[in-house]
Length: 364
Image (tube, rainbow, N blue to C red; front, top):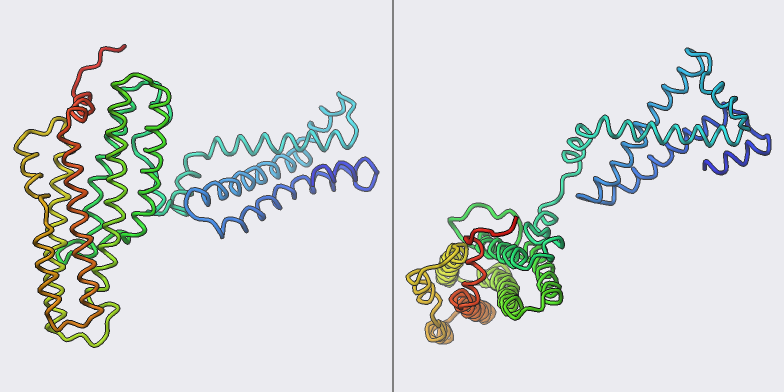
């Protein structure tokens, strides 16, 4: 728009006042265009667009004040300054456009704090967006192998501690779940992908055997976390069906039996995951804690087979019975994955990773 205005001025079709109005109007049009785009965005993307709107509007207000003061209060000192450089009308409009940009920048700097507060309140990031952001790993840490391994371990500990929240919607005594299990998994799986890329990049940069071995342990744990997240979502879906949400004409006794069984599975798995997260968060898990985890995650195949055999001979509706079979199978898989994670916690290489958290730094 500004280029068109300068071309019109060069052809003698508009004067200074009309050209200045068009230059200021271009900023207003840009703000209106950004505002129309903001309605289709959410979170940080919406904040970025709204910041552009604020930037244009703040600059426009200051430019109007500058234009009015220059013309009617100060007898056009800006015009006299441009006369000293013998500028034509197109060049004057270009200089005025630069003034508009300068005033917009000054306004954004002066009003940065209140603008950011308004943006955070008006377009707060969604819970899913917050969940999909890593808290510890970042590219700058890749230059220092020990720091990178420690940060990856801390990120995995955080995600491990989030696993019990996948079961909140299924627990009768739990607080209301902040988000659904599939939404949480979709967000946190992005963090696991970033962790995987982080560890691969670390292995490419650091060729020492010790770093490669420890990064392989962390990558194995990363994959187990991803499998646990997917399995918990499957358990949630199977439990919803088994609870009678998609099954009609189920007798009340059958509903009560299934609900009690599912609650026992969920409570047992929730306790197991909490104990696993607490132990993994310790710098050096002791033998008693690891033994307790091994007992909590012992093979449940015989128990689950017994439950399925009893249900097979019951008079439950076929669709409900199949849903319960799915829930017990997924529960069995979750226990197996948790046990594999415990075995990785008990490995000597894992001890090397966690020991770095308590070792004093020798670097300056």
